[in-house]
Image 1: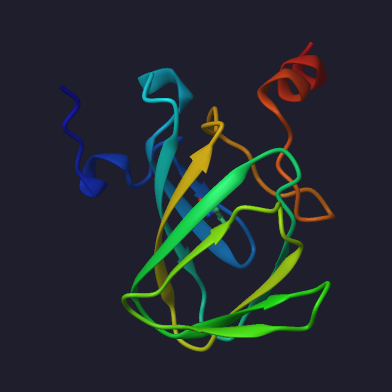
Image 2: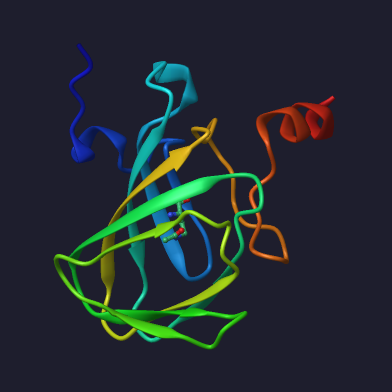
Length: 134
Ligand code: 9YT
């Protein structure tokens, strides 16, 4: 069994920093679960363009308020504690945080580690990351 505490991850390479968010990666591909699980904080007052073309993501809000806009349709959904959204169609979206948004995020396929979004809000596949490092 794997037991991990947020405290053990803070400040390590599993604590990934980006401009508008940080992501504490509690479970990654190397943990062998078939999905990854993260505690992500989206910073208050920010907007983040995200479009996971290579991954599916489920997002559950445990603290804070904001919204998610589907960029193809213009639909906007409010996010508050107890809200889940799942990007089951690789949806192109804009995530906005009114206050710090604490989100529990799970990815399939699992993230391998240090991914941050590219300029289009996309994460590379594990294979693409390997090729880029070679
Ligand atoms: C909700 C979302 O996708 N935020 C961006 C960070 C991502 N959840 C991650 O890498 O943990």
